[in-house]
Image (cartoon, rainbow, N blue to C red; front, side):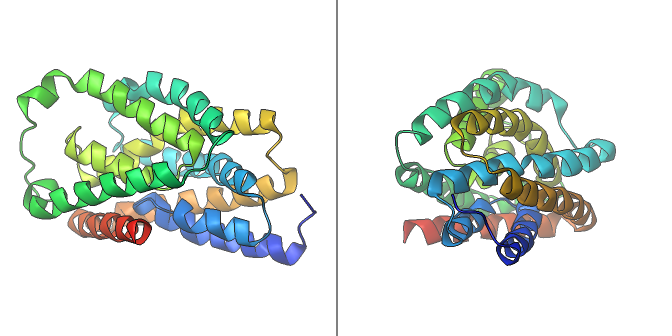
Length: 255
């Protein structure tokens, strides 16, 4: 890859900061950032690699703020740990031999179905009083968590675009977390997958030091700003924003 100019790096920093700040609240930042990096002349595989590896910056600052606030559900996060450790290795393997379009469409369908479900059950999803989880979900929660971690870990290693939205839908609908708990917990859940993916991308030679530094520092700032914003916005409003974003992102990909 040719060295990037200072103007290009500044533009990448600003776009990364804006999209990742939005991504902390809802997810879907990669839908914008990855195509933007490609438009800046960065090869597709490297665009995915820098997006996912750089997002470790969001994990550092955003994870710290959410951990201090006490909104992370550590039990759910631990259920997913085996999957998010194994999954990225599988995802990077597929990334090296295929393109992400088919899987992104699958994620879009799942996001659309999940968003539609939450719209129909919005009073239970984002209401002040949450319904008790189904007995099946309560009984098999650890196993569902491990499967969830494997799916998310694999997808993060493969592309990651829409991974935040998919995580949110599953944490709310399957794990019965509140919207704010979901936003906080998925930062913790995604952390191992981002770290392992970054190591794999470095091994594959897909990381450029200057570009990685630019994206990572922008993500550090975005994680700090986005996490504080989410703690200050009313949870019902967060829920409506999340549902709308999931549906819009899914429709954009499908059509």
